[in-house]
Amino acid sequence: MHSAKRAEAGKELSNGERYVGEAREHLPFKRPCEKTYLLKSLLHLKMETGSDVCDHIRKFFDIIDKLQDLDIVIDEDLTSVMLLYSLPANFETFRVAIESRGELPKLVT
Image (cartoon, rainbow, N blue to C red; front, top):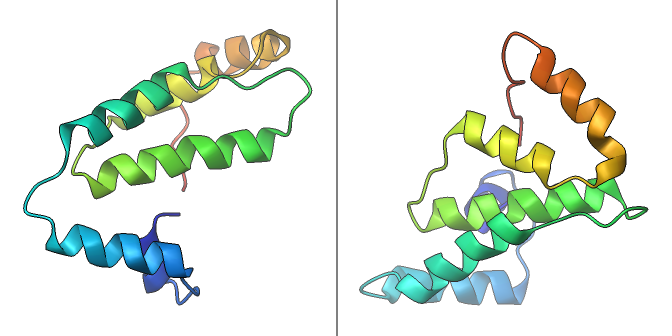
């Protein structure tokens, strides 16, 4: 959950989140290298076999939230497909089952 959503939800922000939020408000532009870094991170994010699915999903949506903070919105269907294909090979049956449905599931963040 990005810092603006956390603040709206009444969750305590860390000092780092407050600092970054304040700094972003005063920056005249968004750095292209930050956008590039986040997009690359999202495209290359792969869950390792045996690691925690919840942690992986948290990382995935943390990057999505940061991109949204930079005014980059990724289509929901594309986000679903990217998340499915970031899962390891042992999720192949799950991936096929999801893809076989009439439409991709709606994402809830």
